[in-house]
Amino acid sequence: MIVANTPEQIDMFRFLSLRSALKLECLGMTRRGQSAYSIIKAEYGFTGNKKSVLEQMEQIIKEVKND
Image (tube, rainbow, N blue to C red):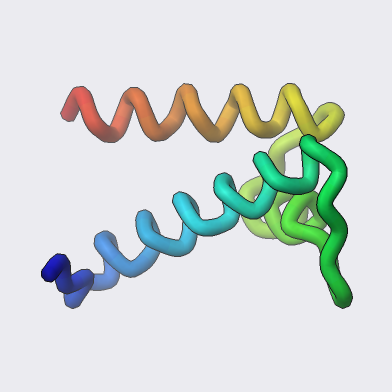
């Protein structure tokens, strides 16, 4: 079992969860309430359409994994 108990791990878990939700939105799935796309744009300041925001997020994840 994996435990995210530091603020950095919790933030990364949320980032990964939002990325997964955005992937589903790109495939056409919708959700009630605020979309993952709008949450990501508001919190992280990304610009562009859903696919370009997803690519930007995946680039950040690659950079974090390499560190």
